[in-house]
Length: 340
Image (cartoon, rainbow, N blue to C red; front, side):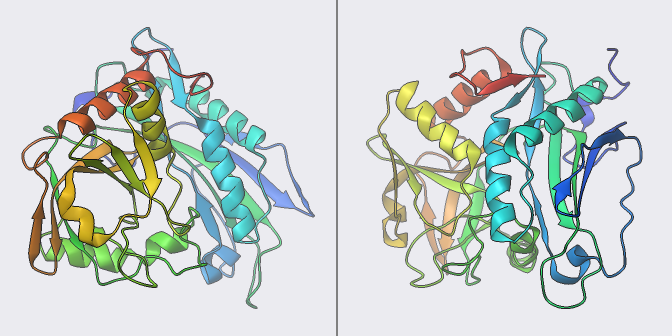
């Protein structure tokens, strides 16, 4: 299929409408088969459950053109599995993982003219989401739901090269113990908006959220998981029941062990040990790894030895290996790369 006439090099990380999206409706206790449609508008009641009580969940993933010209996506089964868990926690009907993967592949295929070419630095962002669609005025779950998948071409997250981030330890709490921090629900992101706007006003790129109960342990940023590297080269990521189980983070930990031969550990990470790490990064779908150069703890600056001016050496190896797997230049573990 001939590609759209888009200046791929100039793409930012924003929304561009593509030709097709997938829509399936849940009514009378069952999902319909779903269809591809050219209509990008969502029409719902003014009293829809999603508008009244924020009953909505979503996923974020990408489609790529590999070095040999194939269009692929990365570990969609894990996105489907995570969405199943999110739905169960918000008392929403589960959209089955297998059907989720089929819908994602179908939507990418229908919009393959928007998948950027290999080497452009751009990708096709894929957003599956679900929301309560029927009128709900009392506080309760909706009875009807809509599951949708749309796509949009996006540019590289780091335009003009990687610049290490400066982040602050936030006084805001991201998630309560036994709350919803471990699922990908819109409500979690809504509560973080004030904190990130405030961080930007204060000159910081991001927030580091701590556990709400003791405020002594590192959790995540609200949009990405943390990944640390010790001075002796061990990869460490925080363990908590109230952070989102990032697919990128889980993949990087496996890459560290199986491709780079590094020791990799998921454990509780305490604020008091931050100054002992050599490298720090934020990991997620958008940038894979965003390097952190400085962490500010209420005026006290913690500077990471590797990462003040560029991505640290271990972080760079992790980034290069995972992106190589995604782009088809490095052999992927079984099932990680799914061809469209």
